[in-house]
Length: 562
Image 1 (tube, one colour):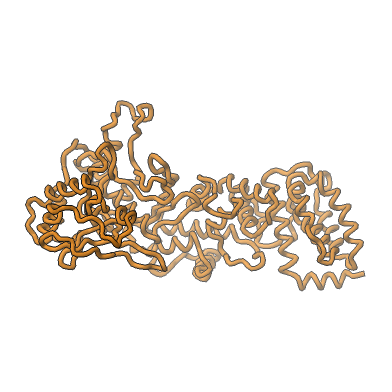
Image 2 (cartoon, rainbow, N blue to C red; image 1 turned 180 degrees about the vertical axis):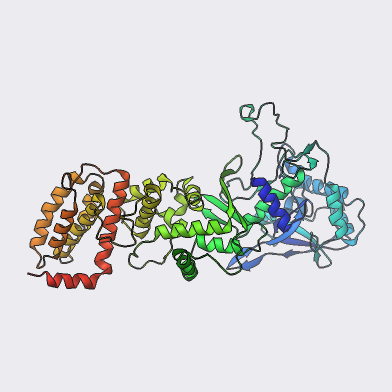
């Protein structure tokens, strides 16, 4: 299904013809008709203060250089300084043989110029060039002011390259296209972010006998996939990974997405609904209001019935790992995305730039340094998959958030919103998972969380701002997990704090909350994981209520002054 969808993507776009690929180039070698190197033209441009290489459609490099004779394999029309400038004689000789073979029957001016260039001694690197950069940089030929590539080059050279591609090999029935095609042993590699070796194949065969399919040999094709389909899926996947509108990072993984027969509108909408910025708030507000009212979700230029594909990939040494592959109509995917934001809705904590929390913000809260790159390897893909399918959130996310709170971190909006969403989706909780404080809720764990917030506030108000730390730093973790061992002590301390104050407001609120607790066991010896989440949510709601309703609280304090 994955390969079929990618082949269909290639057929819909056909940005690169078979046997060719988009390659990054730094320089062009301007040559004369006699084969003299006239000058080296830089092709790089400055974008946002950084050098950006020119992207050209050039002959495919197949599966790269490998094996014993790796350094004797030259690439046609584009290669590094060793082959193009003769910085190493054996490689320059390899390039000469390639050009003579491919261009043997081509008699155009540019073809004659390239053959003449390789018939002469290697020109070497100009004096003003850095040797290391000159060796590794990629070069193409330029003749009479035109680069020799697929778009701007000689059509006869293009045809000669395509005709030179071998069609020898075993004939098979391709499982993707259904046509008779040539079996391909080595599939081209995919350029995925995070791969330490540069490029890795998506489909390959293990060398070790113990990992092979029964009866398979090392030279057998890794799958019954023909040459055309293999080229198509790799070309489509590499194109998607180069487009900023078609992929995004998920911790250490990469999410690739595309719409079938789309014009890019659906991909753009998915980008800002899955990873919104401050500028996307107004657009998301419009969609969320329609969702809340039960109205159809519409957006200009968007085809909700379009089939939408999502592929989550993870870097690996041998070959790329597929975390998940999901396909649905874009309308269903968009609705599930918005439903996730609806569950994540919670009262704002101070100045928060994100009304709708992007995935990278949620994932970063599970790490010590708040970097999404440090997220557990599988967590990003698991979270995205649960959102796309509207299924239970991964419990590893819940555990990770609780662990950061137990380590003494602040219960901020992101942590509280994540806990709220998990309680709603995984535990079907409705009573305490409100946007803001629910004063009518009688859940024991939620009330205990509120009570802890009141006791902390009472301590803060009684200290006249001279307090360096509150009871939260010392007692919060124990109170959340084992209330019975902590709350009797905290309640005794609160009596001393109340004695320093001129108001009975917090004592009245404390008494009110104590009345909501279960009479038989108000302070249980331990709370389950879900009740720990309710405790934290109660604490967060009550703490935010002290700030969001400050004027009302001041009025209540005046009414209760003795």
